[in-house]
Amino acid sequence: EQIEKGGYDHFMLKEIYEQPSVIKDTYRGRLLANEGIVRLGGLEDHIKRFINADRIIIVACGTSWHAGLVAEYIFEDLVRVPVEVEYASEFRYRNPIITEKDVVIAISQSGETADTLAAIKLAKEKGAFVYGVCNVVGSTISRETHSGTYTHAGPEIGVASTKAFTTQITVLTMMALRLAKSKGTLSQSDYMLHLRELDMIPAKVEEALQSDENIKEISKVFKDAANFLYLGRGYNFPVALEGALKLKEISYIHAEGYPAAEMKHGPIALIDEQMPVVVIAINNNHYEKVVSNIQEIKSRAGKIIAVVSEGDTTVKEMADYVMEVPVTPETLSPLVTTIPLQLLSYHIAVMLGRDVDQPRNLAKSVTVE
Ligand code: G6P
Image 1 (cartoon, rainbow, N blue to C red):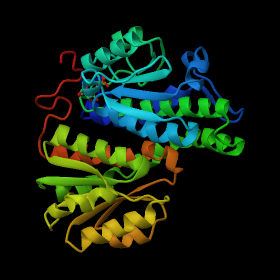
Image 2: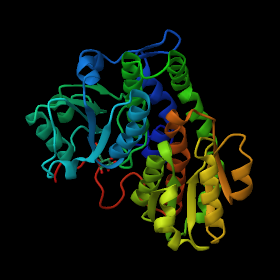
Image 3: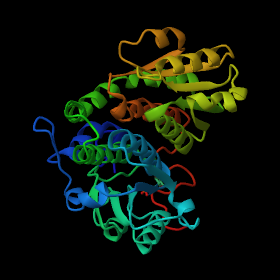
């Protein structure tokens, strides 16, 4: 096992550090940035089905559901197609409205999650076209779907999903870019920019990983907190949810993710000097608004840990602690902003002596209801 961990203390840490290379593996041979080509075999074969779809329904559980939420922003933004993201467990029992014009994307690392599988079967019965985004080759979901794309993240052993999440987003981004090209919903220059930026993601993730020591120091300060709040907006709202999920899964600290602007409708009541608030405050169209959320937290004595873009000055002055990530277009930003949050949860869990790779009560793959 020590050998399998490749010198890292835990599989989770190894998998976090593998992200630059596995993201590259995910798009290798599929993304030719300079030539302006994105090519996913499973998508090319059924591109008309996607183009003619009235809407896309994404079904998934856990972290994969969070990747689905990120995809909702990407698809609606770049492809201008309505997207619904569903917990597979709710969808399957809701008598959902599904038609033959719907495309269902099922996202699953293991490809074995029982609820996701049941949602796929239901969608197929109703005539929808079902596409899988799975990591495990030959898994049940990859066989039960009409077509799909593998993430190629390699085996993920840590129960808390890390590299599966970022590679799922990579695949979903490529799908959106390919469809945007066919549908003409993205200008040629924006399309090319996205391809080039996606090609730069591995290097940016590598850079984000370099803040590890700083994040370890921050973890020392907050490891004994009883609660954490995670806030983000737009593309980074799902990242806030995922950051909170990671922390609760492996450290057993209660954490909640929230859209930053919703804070005033509830969570603000919880803020006092005991409450660390992780705010994703990268330089994007929501920046000013997130800055005012930070002010509101500060005026209630909450402690701010902010994820900021390199070169940021405003939030840096306001926050108690910052974790820097390279500047990235908003559409691709979850791929980098999620990195410091993975590391934060990892270090806190280690400091608390938790079983990071096999947290209590959790399973890597939930094959029963
Ligand atoms: C379990 C795992 C999570 C995972 C979820 C969905 O809860 O512990 O890490 O996100 O199942 O699994 P899937 O394999 O379908 O992505």
